[in-house]
Image (tube, rainbow, N blue to C red; front, side, top):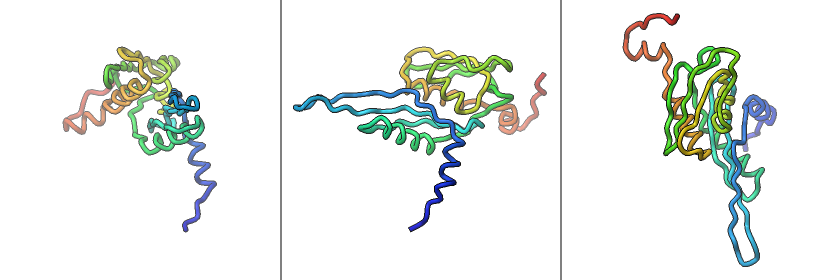
Length: 170
């Protein structure tokens, strides 16, 4: 059996930023009363351009958060950040939720709702303006935010794709 290095696990989890966005409690009515179960929507990021999200379900809140954290760590993806903000304005969609992300000058901060703010702060984006349109369902809003972040393109990626040099930014 392989030995697990506990210290490296602790260091890895300390570097990650985890935020619990929403905890849902559902009840099943049975003969003896109600049985509760919980689902936790968790966002995890390293604060340096990598972020993921996950849902954990369990009979206890702490267990559901831990499960969501593990799923979110496995789904971490890189996002484009330029000078602490997003490269350009974009709209992300998932279901009937839409999220509009716009770059903002330094000092603006993260102006966004709860779910979008959790994703952007975990990714390490410091200045951005966001607006949620349509459905406000937490899960759909997070997935729409991920759609927007993953659709972003930097100047370098566009130049490489087109095979030409774009004029320099002012």
